[in-house]
Length: 85
View (cartoon, helix red, strand yellow):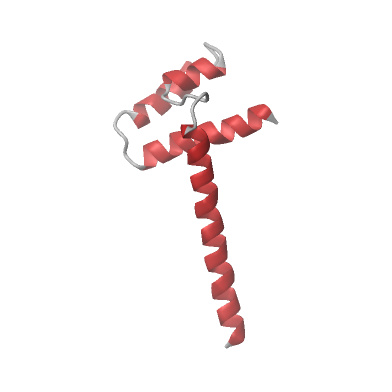
C-alpha cells in the first residue's frame, strides 16, 4: 500500500508540474524515466524534483482528487437536470 500511495502522490506532482509548464519539469520527468532502476526510487524521485518527505507531492494528489470530485459532481448535476426535463 505504501508504494502505491507514494507513487500516486509522486506522479501527481510530476504531472502537475509538466502540464503547468514548470521550467525543467519535462526534462526532470524524462530523466527519471531514463534513469530506470539505476538508484533507489526515493533518490530517483528526488533527482526529478519530487521530495516525498515534504507535503508538496501529497498536496498535488489532494488537489487532483478534489478536481476529480468536482468534475464528477458537475456530471451528476447535469445528468440530474437532464432527467428532470
